[in-house]
Length: 360
Ligand code: DP6
Image (tube, rainbow, N blue to C red):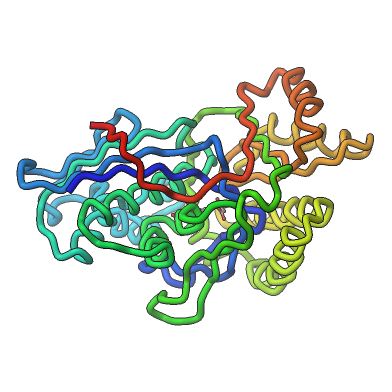
């Protein structure tokens, strides 16, 4: 009844931003990502009647788990909080949103038909909630470990569907290499899961360099942010009209190892997503002055013949899309910039795996 999983984070080349079904986490558009070797979460889960309450420890911090759900909303009622938030005024809406980890464990318990309390210990090797896809690796690891510990024998597609319900982007981390999350058409979400476009070995030279500019926790989480975009952004329909072309170009580019077309289209798709965020009411601006400085440097380096592109998620960090041969030069140039606190170089990584070394 104890299992441990290791999941890598993923970084999207075509972004997911907006849900057509918030409860099941069904997206408006498909998305494509690279699973990143080097940014990972390890999670151990044990269901046992030796526990008289659920214990969840994430990065050394124990989550407050409220047993009585009828009291004021807590972490366990994230969805209620979400709903409340959308009806609340601007200032209150701008709080950090949380993933409903306990609700996700409850879903897994129900699927397996078990009732035992759970202990979860989870550890990531990178800053969480700063736009570094911590929820993707976190929810992928917890899904795989909990499903195994609960005795459910799920294949990768089933795990992807389950992980999706914890956090959308987590469904892509189940697979390694280059991955597409198919939006699906069905109301019940049974056709909304990730598939592998190509394994890590397909394009070993592809790199994403993550620059950490700020480790501050973001003010607007992706969950609340994307809901506000869908509701208020005047350009959202245009996003949906153009995203299929981005998907096609990047999917093909990955299969043909066409770096220019993958890099340039991924950068364009990222800018389109940030244009949505900026034109949401109230505006969601994840960029900091340092973010723009790095972006301008990248544009300059590219003009000077060093081919690299950028992508940015729901946070200030810039991820540089490049090839292995240019990593030493890029590292040198990045290290010379005072805003860059840390650099993590990611190659295409493997999907979520069960491992034998437990955290407790
Ligand atoms: C900007 O997967 O964190 O990183 O489904 O509400 O948990 P939820 O959102 P989440 O959103 C990720 C948004 C993004 C783009 C992406 O990874 O595709």
